[in-house]
Image 1 (tube, rainbow, N blue to C red):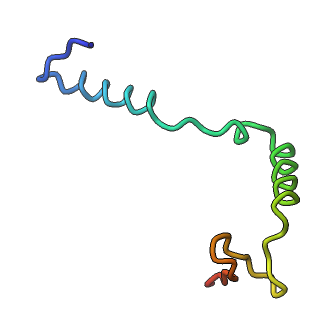
Image 2 (image 1 turned 60 degrees about the vertical axis):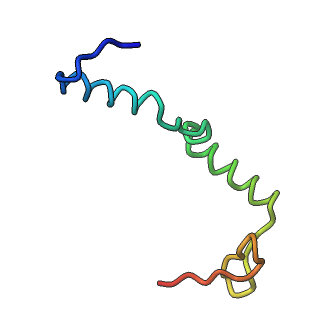
Length: 72
């Protein structure tokens, strides 16, 4: 355990920052891949899952299997 005096606000602030950056969620590995490779992976996933769109071009909701109209 780190020995910290509670009066020392700068040390506490630094500890909080270090704690935040060490415990935050790490980015997915796919996000680090080059753009072309990511596009290919996305296309592959789309083929696997099937195109989830209705005849009028709206997306389908995965749970209720109903069309999800976008408000613009």
